[in-house]
Length: 114
Image (cartoon, one colour):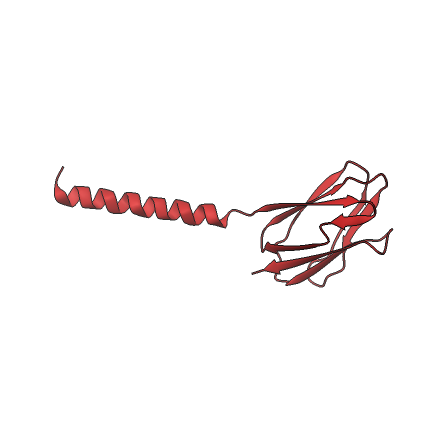
């Protein structure tokens, strides 16, 4: 193999590895929050935009998962014990408040890093 072909092959391989690295870094992370003893656990979470948050009811009673945050409104309705839902935080909001409409003391504060 000529020196030019070897150089091109090495450069192509390096670019491919670099793109694979960038792609791997762009994958969203998954975070799990549980509902236990009438609380979100953890009660605060810092994530990146596009990350996935799984909210799982590990409590012995239903909870109503909702967000009234402007530009990131959602209502997951009642979540029975053992049930879980996924939320993709693809929002420009920097702070999202998730709560339970049944138990007003339940609150999850999600900081979304851009």
